[in-house]
Image (cartoon, rainbow, N blue to C red; front, side, top):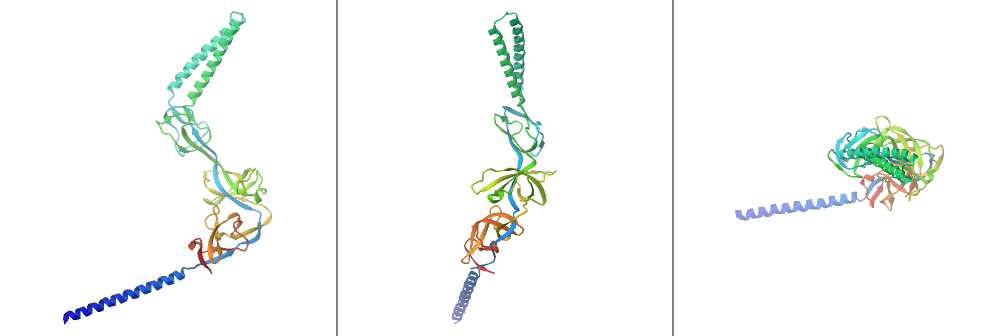
Length: 350
């Protein structure tokens, strides 16, 4: 009898557990269905691409480059005996950077000097003898030729010896050192990368509709993205005579680096070209841009779906950005909520 009771109790417990698990599974399925319905459409805020008047003033972005960037190559052979400069050191034009062993070359210079001295004396003696017709013209010419050869050999020997004392051809800073004491050099071995950042070049791209507004020698304001609170003065040094495949023109702006070299080569910069006139432009909110102004994209809403689209941008006017390609007036663009979107995501407009 007790055994039967135990069996009935066990069956009831198992049934209760099974019933609970079934209910839980049903509730989880219902919760998942609700979540799926909720996440089916992402709420977003839209803005419209509109045509409006803006100043003809415009901005252009680019990268700061050193006014001089030189990779120094070896013009001699031999082992490096001394290094006088390391990475980050400032150097002046003509300053000694490294010394290569040169005993053999010193001996060659001494030999060339001796040959030069002898050839010079022979030429002087033969010249005196020729005045008294004591030698033939052929002998005098041979003496003159020997002297010229000795002079050339001495120049070459001195040049080879001088090349063992490696000097900086420009004023700047050692950006990278490729050799160490004990390194063996051959011709064209890389030695140092030297950059001059006392001035910097900001190379920017200007659209065809704006390039005629830029003049060589014009003063422009320049800002570095890494130094947002500082503005620098630049001078337009060169304007490309030919556009690239995107119909943009290269414009080179020279910027004086302030004391302390606040600007660094490789920084991203913006140039501001001020023009006292207005024009019409297609504008969208700056917040609508996905990513950076270097590779701009926007989400355009079509059939309640967010479609990621490449655009090209021009001037930045406050909280608005000019769109020069990829959009048309009246198109609806996502301004807020892009962080939750992927290409083709369903959206609902707030």
